[in-house]
Length: 345
Ligand SMILES: Cc1cc2nc3c(=O)[nH]c(=O)nc-3n(C[C@H](O)[C@H](O)[C@H](O)COP(=O)(O)OP(=O)(O)OC[C@H]3O[C@@H](n4cnc5c(N)ncnc54)[C@H](O)[C@@H]3O)c2cc1C
Image (cartoon, rainbow, N blue to C red):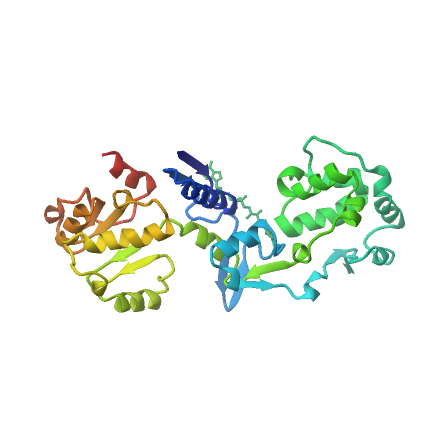
């Protein structure tokens, strides 16, 4: 099965994850490529450390401990990294007319809510009388105005949309950004009725984040191409060096000198690495792997294991590394397309 996904934002990477999982479950051979126009994976989502502060460029919290994103985080081994927001974080304020107004957390609190006029509040509570179903997609603002009136749509929903998407409710599609609202309308016609009838689980409204920032989710998804080190050095030494450089995370298996009976140029180190990676990527075969090498015994070992080899001229000149499938002076510039070409050759 050949699959191409456009965009390595959280949406594209999640789709890639589920396609891979499903193909593995059905033991289908999979040729999957995620194309990304930008220089990094993650799209909008980015976590930056700045002068001791953690800055989120986009999502900083995700709603619902029993939602799809939460389950995905669990699947990626990030369950213990989740941090649940404190109850006080449920308080949100709207700045209007130079004053902060606490968003009403219950229907009675609406009475004292100063950011809406009396007329606007009346129109809002009359929502069940005005609500109609509409099957066509529309902007978030148009949807909200139909249900709760122009004033509440601008003041409340416009603000929520700016807070969540840093976007404009008059331009964002409702179906793309709040499909849950369309669902509420389809099932109950009125949003107020939907909220009264809806029995949401306690986890459904819980806001959570990840200790290392939301980008950890993206990094865990992007690191799903299984990567191993097979080396003649001791595993403990390799681990120590990687950890010191903050580079341990991307490697899924490390095969050191004492993990095999025969070292390179024997294929055992590479075959052992491939076997370990197959525990993570079921169906992975040695002939699906690309090896990066800089020595002649290493190239011989990889070829004997049936793998493709890219040799780098770190230690030897290109003339000595000719047994590799490709010889490069630097890994910079190698991308998925050039690696794929190795298999076509
Ligand atoms: C300021 C801000 C705050 C937010 N806060 C929250 C929050 O607290 N909670 C929450 O749940 N959500 C929040 N969001 C929303 C959430 O971050 C986004 O909905 C989500 O990141 C979008 O992911 P995506 O994969 O759909 O799109 P994107 O992140 O936009 O990714 C799309 C990717 O596709 C690539 N691409 C586009 N076209 C092509 C092409 N033709 N070929 C190849 N690649 C292409 C782009 O370069 C990009 O990397 C916030 C957003 C912003 C901006």
